[in-house]
Every structure is written in C-alpha cells, then in structure tokens.
Length: 302
Image 1 (cartoon, rainbow, N blue to C red):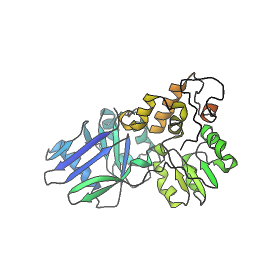
Image 2: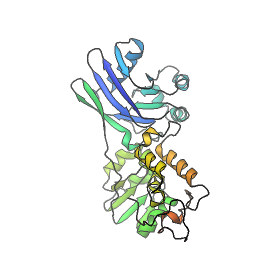
Image 3: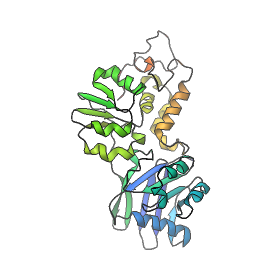
Image 4: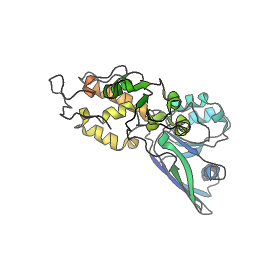
C-alpha cells in the first residue's frame, strides 16, 4: 500500500487526535504527559470497547505485546502503533527485520534514536494540543536549501562525492555514511546527507554548528536535473511522492535509487551509484547527440 493516510481518533469524552502520515515510518517524540500514550490507548479502545471512533482509509491497530513477532507478521496493509514501552522496541534489529518485510505503516512513540531504523527527519513529530484537540507537528523544518561554505562533507563516497567535487573541488570530502556526519558539524561547513533516512542522527546534527543540506537523497536531486525537465511522469512523482511510493520500500532513498536506476538503464544518461555520469555534470549535450531528455540548460541542482 502507499504510505499516505489521514487518521482521525475521537473519544466519547470529546478528545480528538487528527493527523496524517506520509511514509512507512513515523516517529512521535516528546516529554511525558503530552498525550502520546493517550493516543495509543484510544486506538486500542476503538478496536476493543468501541467507545472511541477511529476514521482512516486503512485499518489502524496497536501491535499486541504478547507474541508480537507473530502478530506483526499477521497484519497487512495497516497502520500499526507502538508505544515507547513496547517490548518489540527493545529488540532493535529483530523488530527492524520484521518491519522491513512488512507492507504496513508504523507509528512509533519513542524518545530513543532508533538507530536501527531508516526514517526521515521530516517524519519526526511532537503532539501539539489545544484543549481536547491534538495534532502532530514536525520537530524539524525542511533542510533542502544548499548553503555555500568553506567546507563540505557528504555522506556519499562515490557518485555523490564526485558530483559535489565537480562544483566545489577539494573543499568537498566524504564522511563515509550518514552516521558519521555529526563528527564534522563545525562552523563554515555544509553537511550533505540523505534526509529520507537520517532521522536517527538528527539530534546530534542539531547540536553542531554546521549548515545542513538534507534532500531526500542524491538520486532525488538528480531527478530534478535538466536531464528530466520534460518528463511528465517524473514531475508528477516529485510533486506527490507520498501518494505513489509504496510501503515495500523502507525509505524514499531506497525508492528513488531503484527508480532512477531503472528509468535510465541502457540510456546515455544511465545512473550508477559507483560513478557519476557526465550527463549530470556537463552542458547538454556534451556528446553532440540528442537524447530524449535534451535541454540546453546548464546549472547546479539546488
């Protein structure tokens, strides 16, 4: 199933939670007594005692704690909620393996980093309340505006590194993985990472003094390049990815990598993670030929 869904929970006492989820993994954080566990209890109540009304286009349920592995595997095309004291969360990578092969969406209440899960920094929320009415508010704003600096550190050590070195030369180096970015969060530095899976590291990154450039992924950036300016299918995808990307993918980074690889296979602008294709760097067309994405534009992706 696709990952975008609207959820409305209303109790008999007038308590209401209204929010949307957009990806396979959603993380809710916040201090105690902010309404996180109340949300879980109301969803349980909607399934058992029917004193709470729950509206959504797919089933919503709290993952049972007893025999959670068997129960998780039995669910399909649903939204599953896990409170922060759920025993499955303590299993870490064991839970991740079950989630990876699941077609469900997951809403996890936790103040831990959950380093074993590839979730987006855009899908980290806190509960905001106005009386009995509750919504979800993002913890971090968008970080997809590139800031020029004296130094640049990218998590990529292959095509992505080569791409940015083409524009900024020796000022660009790799940290070899998004988990290492925070070690370089210094002044006059721009850190470049895949926003679609960098959620576990955001707290440490925000403690630093570096500027952050966190697009969905490097492949997402390339899909915005002049090579694809005339492709209507790609334009539609980039405008509303949450309505297209299915829960078979762990993150949008995984989806965009597979998508870009498939649509460019066998073409002059074929994409490879290992080495950047000159079509994404040079003025069209440096080969003196005209491909289907031909355009005379020559500019950096921003």
